[in-house]
Image (cartoon, rainbow, N blue to C red):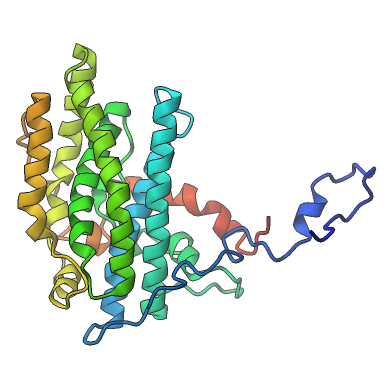
Length: 311
């Protein structure tokens, strides 16, 4: 290991000075391996690169934003076991996000933000840290604040049940990268869904207070449920080209799984209508709740303030 000290061992003026010397390690991932190494990243014949990139951004943003919300539970969960479980779920989604954003960049580099000072930040990190709210394409279910533990369990159940069905279809994509990401993600999302399903049942059939909290969380999140099955033009084109999935086609399978959990828990489906958008525009179009702006400000502040930061 190279000597990165800038002071003699007995010089205590700046105990951390040595951390700033080795410029191989950039704070935002430059020294990591290519996340797509070993996978054929060639855009399939007949597929528009820009459309493929946008589709990957949609799925990547879902995972990135959801992972940030779940990560907020780190050190705040009801007990250590759930703290670790939630942290692992957040890390799984963050890994999916990195691969999908990297795939978007490889398909169409024009969608990667350019940094004015030419900082050597990896493409997937530029997409995560240097896009504004209106450029994010995630569904709004992923971005709303956590609420209590019961609401978080409900959100993970809704999100993972839907995303698991989507990834099962996506594993047959004509795009080699998406197929590989989905195949790995199916295993992860199966655990996420089972974790949330067990806790949903436990809270629904537990104390009066736990059931009250669970039902309140379900009521609050339910208006965001329908958006997951609304087909955006980009999703329709990706599905038609054999690289993506039309979410509308997932409705029956997802409903069947969710209805089993609700029935076992003695919980009825809420009858609230879906949350509208601005002139029909929703998360896939870059129209979001105010909560996403606050989340991105916190997530992006260090990268934007110190794009050449080192560790």
